Amino acid sequence: MMLSATNVVKAKLINRWLVFDTIRRESGIARAGIATSTGLSKQAISDLVDELIALGLIKESKSAERRVGKPPTPLCINPEGAYALGFHVDVGQMSAIVANLAGDVLCRRDQSLNDLEPERAVTELFAAAKALIREVKIPRDRFLGIGLATPGPFGVAGLSPPRLPGWDGLRLRTLLHEASGFPVSLSNDGQCATIAEWRFGDAARGLTHFVYVYFGIGMGSGVMINSAIFGGASGNAGELGHLTVVPGGHECICGKRGCLETYVSVDAAIRHLSAEGIEVASPAAFAATFDDSHPLISSWIGAGVEPFRNALNALENLFDPQTIMIGGNAPDWLIEVFMAKAEPLLPSVGRIERTLPRIIRSDLGVDAVVRGAAVLPLLTTLNPQYRELNPHA
Ligand SMILES: [Zn+2]
Image (cartoon, rainbow, N blue to C red; front, top):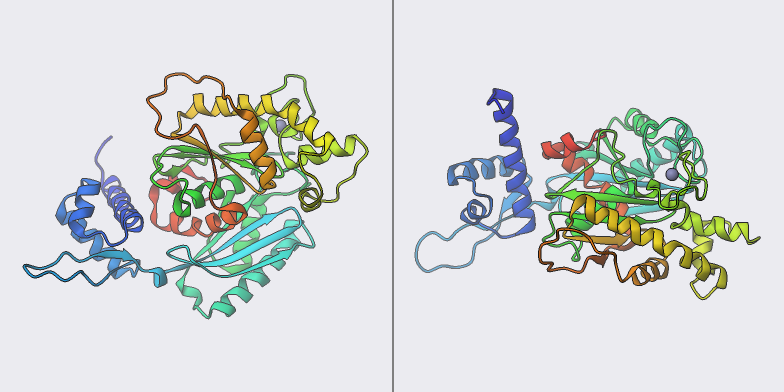
């Protein structure tokens, strides 16, 4: 690569993110520790730390007593340095939070969405945003922006996410920006959950390469490569639900047949029950009423296990992850039954010695999506790699 002024500026921004993220992961680390951890020179660290302190994003905390010499000064994130709004919009419902720079949730609002037309839903979203900002009493200019999580896929003509006819997350993003004046970063639910697990979860602590399978109303995934979420050319990377697993199988909304999410998803379970004459009003009603002791559910799970196992194998062979994490807003029992029945997993090629199980359960539960959404403005603002890998940053 040619070294140009632009590249130098970009390299500096990447290094600044690296320093910020090292301090986030290892709270209390001193400048020398960051130099060891990142390989950057002490002078570069010193400049970048000064810059992050001037921006209010990190702060020096009190150092431990030392009898001889000047003690190293521990550094930590300044939780009050910036704030973000996070939204998770799904079928008929919405969650919204205000989070600080450390990711602490300061207040939240959960409500049903009466209208899923983006033009009308946006008025409810904007009203919620205003109410939350009033509640936390933080000036608007301290907010980096809004992070918006919706089901994907984005911008695919004629293709709506399951049970959201005519839905378009891109349109909602534009409208929310126009209504609020805030920058709005958009990502799908699976990618947001992946970000939250990477940043806040215990199960993903220390992981740099993993795939998160989002088992929800549909089926998605998030791909974390070297600690960066990969959005793809149109933000639709990881649409695992549309992997063909049964050639000529069930019809899918994407126009194909035999896609994974027509076999393994909450929507697939509800459709299966409907085909057997049992109507279920909503995913929540499904979760409240059914479990794997129901004979129709038990036989439906039996048919989905092999497609699920094949999909996990495809992910291992495509991305060589340290592990595959499985979570989502499907009922816990459903995720856990599929994880148990997927064993033994199929062989996968070329693996170095593993230190982790090949599949692990996610840590954060249903809150992961909205918490991940609230991280998007930070990534958009501070991390140039995130902007390169995610077109709706
Ligand atoms: Zn499909």
